[in-house]
Each structure stands twice: as C-alpha cells, then as structure tokens.
Amino acid sequence: MIAYTCWRLSGRELVVIAPGFWRVRLAWENLFLANHFLRRGYDVAVLDFRGHGDSGGRYGFGASESSDLLAVVGELVGDGKPYSRFAVIGLSMGGTIAAVALARRPLLPCRGLAMISSPADFRALRPRPWKSGALRQVRLRHVVRMPRLSARGLFAAKPAAAAAVARLAFPKLIVTAEGDWLVDPSHGRILLQAAAPPVDCVHLDLPGSLHADALVKFAPLALLRLLDRWFARNAPP
Image (cartoon, rainbow, N blue to C red; front, side, top):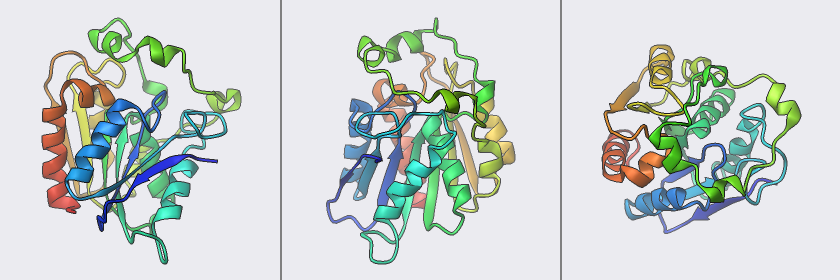
C-alpha cells in the first residue's frame, strides 16, 4: 500500500509532490510546499514512497519506486477520476523517480516536471556530510525515523534520470544549488544536456550548501519565486 494525502480545494489542476529519500509526505517542508500551491489555486497530492511513513514495502533507492508514483497518479488522474491532467514537483530522488515513472508512461497527461536537486545518476552521488547544509538538514528526528530499506534494492539497477528526461516531451525544470552537499550541480548539467526540449535549468547561487527540501526551509523566497514563474508559464492553475 502506498499512502498519500490529497488536498482538494476545488482546483482544476493537480500538483503531485514526490519527496526525497528519508522524507515523509507530512514533513514540514512538504506541507509548506503544498500550502503554497493550494493558495496559488492548485489541488495538491503528496505521497510516501515505499518504506517511508505510512506506506508499506521497503525502499530501494529508485529500483521500484516509480511504480509508487504511478499508482498515486492512477488513482487521481484519468477518465472518471478527479483530474484530467497533473504536474509533478520532485525533490532530490523524488525528481529522479518521477522522471523515470513518466518515461515509463509517455501517454500520461503530465503538464510539467520540476526536478529540485535531483541526481542524474544515483551511482555518481558523492555526499559531503561535513558541509553546513548537511548539518542543518539531517536532524535527530530523521535518524530515529530511518526508512525501511530493501537489501535487494540496494544492489538492483538504479534509475537513469538522464535517459528518462530525454524521452519527456512536456516542459521540464531542473533546479540546482551552489555547493549542494549531496547532489553536485554537475548532475543538473547532465540532465540539461540530455533532456528533450522544452527544458529550463536554473542554478541558485545561494550560501549554505543547501539540498532539495533544505531550499524550501532555508531559502523559500528564492525557490518559490522560481517555481511560481515557471508554473505560471508552463502549467498555470
């Protein structure tokens, strides 16, 4: 079972938020993003990937998690469902998983995908936990709520986001941050070079080596202004 929460305030357009590893759907950062887009006129859904929060199963770092996103979209979007189309905001691995999921189902009515601090290749990650961004982002509450992991998934094939974005014809936004402690901005450049048009890539030159949802918490104005402009142009409410 994959758990998700959908806030419906009569919006005609749906935004799905795909959290990163170790983050649950009701984390403060996800609630902040959801509330912002609700106020902008969208309905919003946020899921717990397998092994996280209230979802069953075990997390495999992208080995099977694309099916989780497709399951949630399948319940909400399509003939006889509440929504006829949707857009996705993916944070860190959530963005990578979303790209792979959408490439698996090219006929899904997706209006756009925003990938925030998303790795192009999981195997190329080189974490730098001594950086200030890691010390601010990884808290004791995260350590004591470790996701349930799949030993098989650790060694299974991982998602190739670069190959996925090359097959996505709808608008894409790739966001990187200066000094990101987990996903180096070079991942964003790889995604940009591989992505089919239309695609925008924005590098946030911010202090603090912030990664993914840390941008939501510590640099909300910069991130939300960027998302608002891009959504207004590519997937308005």
